[in-house]
Length: 322
Length: 302
Image (cartoon, rainbow over all chains, first blue to last red; front, side, top):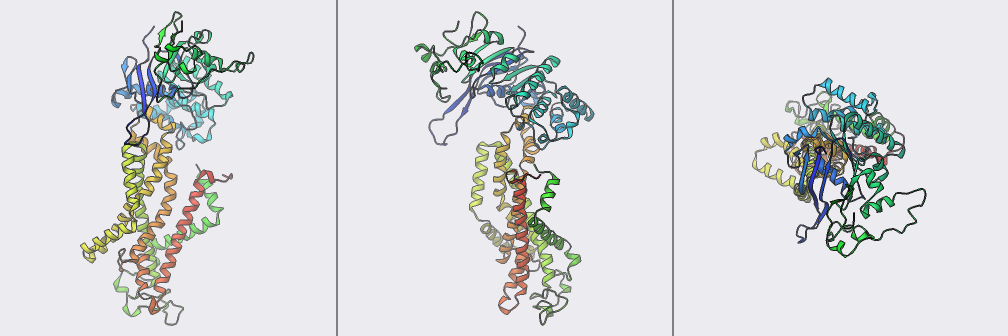
């Protein structure tokens, strides 16, 4: 395997919950608990999981929007999580992000040109005015936007058009790595496919690497190279996309796959798994999935399974996976 | 966001807005053009004649054609003093709102964006400031100022002092409004997008968040101008505002009030009417602006 473009080593993010300032106990929410992933250049690394499992926090932490409480983040072998702004600036060109909600991710008072020119002006100050203009027009063409959009404001566009503009903004500094945080979940189904195809085409043309965050497994199946299944701030299973769908090893992955609505042999006939998400503030000592797991035994409630590599190359955090 | 064209259409379709707007325009023009329009310069002692004092309006018996609305105790034409006084009142009102706005918007922006202890500190400061009445602070400061300096120094700096005092005392209104809109804006993803490219916080605050929080600022500015003019009028009425030789509307009302029992009602009445009309126009315009700029109250026609 080649060297990873982005690598996280044991990153943890803890949010202190608001309390009275005299309170003795300071409850802490564990959003990420020791996540280790290594994203290879050119792949589409998908992260799936239920809401609240920490997948968005993972993306934001890698982008530096959230500083990790513990752990290390590397980009092309350089540690970036403790870099000062001056040293990080050249790296920011190579890392960009596409956000979930295209209605909130564009500044409503800026026209498209200003929105797209800002990253170039800030991160590539050596560019002259005409070069900035040329680069903006090039990226607009690449994302299927009309050049006449430049002078328009975001409210003049539909959701799909806005998301194209947001993708154009992410591409305008020619990055190598893009975090896409649920980029299609706020869009109409008919538009979702267009945006996915656009991301696919751009990856082929520009050799992009994606960290693709989603809760939609059918998108993963279409789009992903490898998949990490997250649950309560931990990676439960990490596998090649095909392997994950054909031979899921972790009971949680199986639960997710069963939940995909099917036309025949409807999944609604099967009895649902019991239990709920444990409280992320007071985590149980054992496996976080044990309260919902059909295979759970006494060992699962006391001993937390670590992520280990199985025979077929899948990594799973379960005592019984093989 | 409303377009300029929609804004003008809304303005022209609302009789209250047209009324308030044109009254305000007339008063502002009257104040600005006072040196050219006023029949007399009330600041120029050469033009005053003590023999003209306390003349009734020109249509009353004993009135003089030179003084349409009569004269005050020093022989100044009431019409001329109103024209100059409106200017001073507006100057203090607008000046104080600029001070309030600059202070309040800056502190509100920092409090909202930084959060944490900075936010807590600034907002508690605002709470303390709000719990002290503006009038009370102004009375204390101006009384000390008046006692510490001689009358001439006081007269020279009175406008400046009033602007600063009213400005500083009312900053929490702007700060709170701005802070609450900043809290709403800063969680939006366009702010994250700006942070992803490493834009420094100061730049994000000024170029991204500030333009999106200015709508409510515009609305309270209009209301606050009215409020500041009223505060100044109240202070002047108490003898702590503008001195009688450079009168604002408030000090005009006060200087006439002494003569009201001797029958010279016009010295007080006419400035008071102008003050009420000015405040009413500003408040109506402010209310109208709030309705227009609030998308939830927007009608479907624009």
